[in-house]
Image 1 (tube, rainbow, N blue to C red):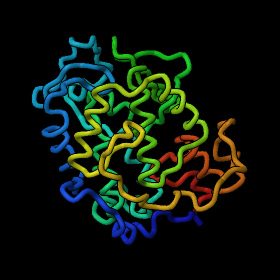
Image 2: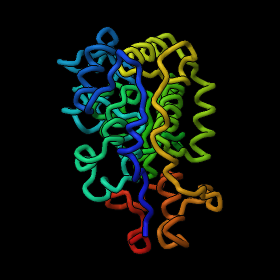
Image 3: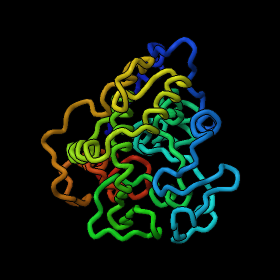
Image 4: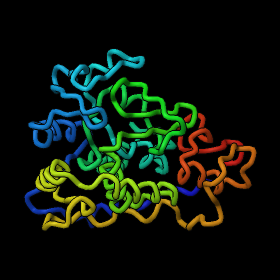
Length: 292
């Protein structure tokens, strides 16, 4: 039997405390409008590829040397990307397993808060957002840049996504914020990667300004971006998504379902190691033959 996580989510929300004059977005749809109108109103550069854009007319692909890989329609629009994918903070929830993302939106207040968290939203070219999907961030072996001058590499076989060097620190700091705020564990390998990325790509002026704007709107800043006096963040909303540490397992060797000794090991490899191949139907449950 798979253990259900976040089962006290609704009660825990009662303890969340935000700045008096700030109000977090009530939904993902509202968060997108707020981000466009109050955060990125004077910042017209896409997150990964650095293309100039207009929210109505879309990106200027020539401005960044972008080459369309496969999806012209999505390549010509700006979409709001969850840096930590909704799949990652939703798949452990019972609401996700019983009805996916739409069911979580309807029934789980913690999921709605995480999905609408402005710290986790960035404007990206739609094709890149779609290709990345819920891939884990990683350094891709023998990277092939599929998008012209845009320094993004994707391994569809390994389901891994390598961002450009000027964004790796931003990503690390956003992941740490989401980890601390929503009680989401990050694997040892990912943590080591993010520590290196944080050093490689220090906080820049726009990241600082973005943090200030979000804090003024939502009521909390990202402490990994700045330690200046900003409103405090919400208390950690949940316990760790794992009820017990899984220290006996390791990500050093990629395994298939036939090599798993238990459902717990399969869950570790899915959630901690990013082995999405174990979850063929993307319902958050790996290795259906042993996780029932």
